[in-house]
Image (cartoon, rainbow, N blue to C red):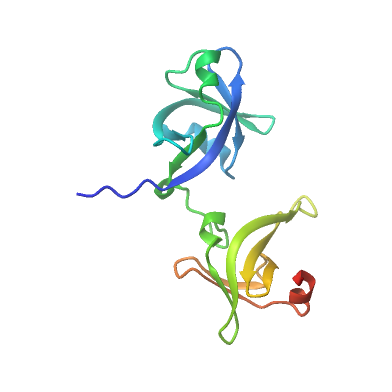
Length: 185
């Protein structure tokens, strides 16, 4: 039986040792940082060598960083060897999202289409456009779409992105008048 390939999803990047007992401070790369404490095993990867398994003993969030303790790491020098590693899980273990929410990695590579079958381009990246405008509003995001005329930034808003079909890698959009001109060369 063939084992499916390990497709990683990075949850955090280890920055430095924290304290004297082998804990590490990590930059959080997920919208669900508390889940790190609920995952019994993660994978540590440097991008050059195969990822290696690691058991998470504890995780807490402190000043916007994850403070992690791994089994077998009990000193500053042992924690120092983890500097720069990514904390990963397999793609299949991501948390399901509710309706109208998408993982950035699922949006990248989707084709963008206008009504009537006119292809706009392909999503190259998803970027923050700015902070929330008030306490209850979500952050603003834009799709960076590669087109035949260059990059086009399309707000990721339900009024504009009218249908997102991750399964078929397709996003239907109704571009506001003048949007192409704002993003033009």
